[in-house]
Length: 304
Image (tube, rainbow, N blue to C red):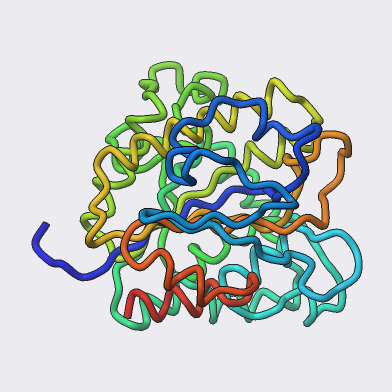
């Protein structure tokens, strides 16, 4: 690597909170990479903080001081802008962004702010053609993260970019792509996908990867699905850690609202969400973040 400037990998997990031990797939799944980062013990609502030499995990209140169940639209808008989107519109809203929030998201999202500061940014997910076709006629329903990226004038990654090894699949391993019309898409292991993200980070100051299968599993209340997607994500974490530059890189993992941590309910939860950070300055980063509104300001400061 030519430069020693800090670089950030942001792993966004949709619908992950810190709950109790009952009906919680985090206490059923085998998650060796996550447990190693956390010193062996999984956080839960009565013991939700973890600090080690290599990683820090703190709980963040996702309700944003607004009544009701947190939702993806306002939660993700808050995460990516540093502004309390739910308070602005007076309620939680999702899954797509509330219409009056779009100018705010367009101007203040983390991608736009970092690019304005001369930083190189990348949204690592790749999308099939049917995704592009759907949003041509449903522009109002583009999710917050994709909307934020497109608002910079950049394009989403296609299947060609994924096949070339320069993007990652939303399902981590590419195994769902044959059902989407791409029978020849090569599958990868979760570990390979994680190593790919770190390799790409050598060319960027900031990369965001979005994993939404956790939220889907929570809504289905399926323990096998939840365990499977968590174990797959843990494999990605293992691959990241294998090639991670601990002196230069910071990886953060967080969410927009709770869901999958309590499979006794089909809805989102009011549980706090985890902020996990490991690598360069992890403790200082988590110490500076008290709510979802603090993540983008902390990232801007770290990468400056």
